[in-house]
Image: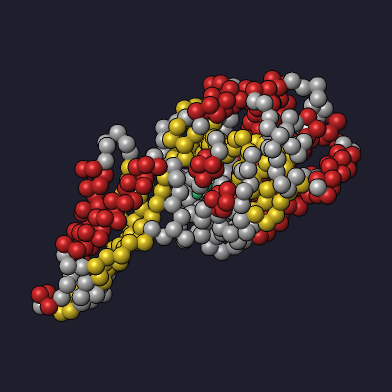
Length: 447
Ligand SMILES: [Zn+2]
Ligand SMILES: [Zn+2]
């Protein structure tokens, strides 16, 4: 209770402080209707005050990339900027995560998400703000995602007194295989949150455009590693050994039947054995072989079934060759990630809002991709929508794909991302208030 009073006092004091800033005079939101929000927010996002600020934040983060659950400096920078804006936040969440709150402090709640982690790779782009951490690089654009969510925070905070509820800003750690989103969900951050939106930069889509689809968008992903154990011996007398190399070879072939012979051809799936390690000499049969790989599907049921069959095939095919096998799905180091499935109603909502922000001809339909996103953990808990934000500049030639050491960000895309984030949240709060009777119990303990 004391904390609630403290936050109210905090909001009031920051309202006074904030209105002394120049941007506030241009942002009296009370007289702006829901239909005017897109244009107003996009203009704000394009203003030098917001745009240059986002660019400078992104460049600072780019220079200091940090891997999953190690984003301490990134998190510190985010908190410093939220402090300057007067945005209240919770920290730490899921080790390095930061969760901000803007608005009334009361229901309804709508969440926006950005991921913070970099990749373990050496940047090859020579430019002024190149990574200063050898072997680490923001090669997936998460530096841009943080900058755009902060841009949205700045815009929303300017209009906080007019928000019809509370926007929850999730800066999450460890998207790149660490299951950071799952830990955010497990921390209870989505309690009473009605919807969540997330974006990813796309080098193949022109600036000013977005693309997405309803239903399955990205695949669910799992990893496996198996040890096939036989009995080592002299390669010239194989009948005194139990050969795990031959057993593992049969296993690799049998695993290929799962997609080609057992799966519905209209239900896209992948099983790839990408690792095969065993033996070290020309004339020695080794004791054991390690194989490993990944599997992908677009539905949870298919995912569970495929995972079960991978284990069965490995163990039973090993037994045919008189070997033993153990299978590890690496749930702690590489947690399985469910398919990213966009909510049907939110798809319609997104089409309307993105159409208003960018023009309907700039809202494209996309085919599903076999890549994955841990945003799916949020979508398992509450309705969620994930989309791609264009950043291709036709005049600058081809942009390398994410996870390339030559990956670059086109910062011209930032105003569109920030404005979309802010508009999606602000308008959704209005829609929820008008369509759904609020339940008194809807609250966040931290508010
Ligand atoms: Zn990535
Ligand atoms: Zn990414």
